[in-house]
Length: 352
Image 1 (cartoon, rainbow, N blue to C red):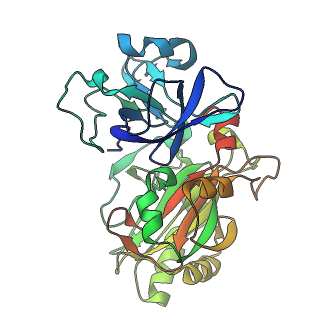
Image 2 (cartoon, helix red, strand yellow; image 1 turned 90 degrees about the vertical axis):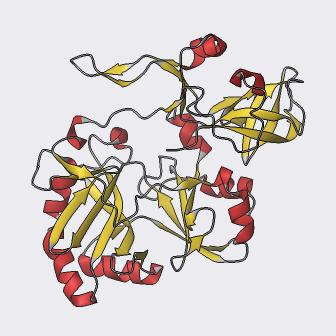
Image 3 (tube, rainbow, N blue to C red; image 1 turned 180 degrees about the vertical axis):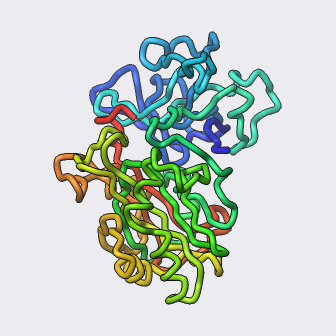
């Protein structure tokens, strides 16, 4: 489960031009707007990331006017997402603020002081993750299979040590598209289609992901690719189009844009150049390729690099960027070496 709330140290406090009542604090790689004089450099705080949904408790009531979200329920009254206070990207006096800080006293336990301690469950915080639209639901075979990794990328703001460890290495950069995650595989004679967290019934054509897989004839293409390449494989990408995230890219129908091809036999991604070649042989479109960089950037510089228009729709800010090495590589802290920087202008524009 994602760590949404943790004990962290304030690394710096800086003034905000033209602001007397607020200043900005550096926590991990995030900038957070705080009340002036409330914190000092070196203070321990409880830091809650964006996408946190704080429960309805008296200590969070000051957030009601700006951040309250009613519960999301089914037609029968079952709660899919509880009511609470959503923490999202904000902009105050020109300063982007991502997250919120509280004093350690909010924990009610003076023994909890170790930096990095996960206090998500202790505070009753859950991820703000609205349910999928009807076109994404349907018949399910089971949980996401364990023989292929999920496609979630970690935000760069919590990876300062990882960035330092891999400084000087070449990375390729792609646009992060705002759609829904898709995985398809051919393994042990079986074809499968998956959403971010579930293994779907590929025959359920009420589901957008399954319809896309059928329209691309992926079962036959992946089986043929296995025979040609000599290994079983999966393709992973983002589906965009009508009914998905507001169809920001103004597509007339659902489209798959591939960002990973997985060698299931080896349990690793194929090299970037091979991914482009195999996707081409399969007749699949890849996500926009934004070139290569040598990693010599701070967190703030990588966030700045994420800012720009989408290659698919220049009037729309891109959601962000994803960085991966040219060959699949493991990091001792992160696991697979791959991370994202989200465009703050995108978050502000779309209230995310």
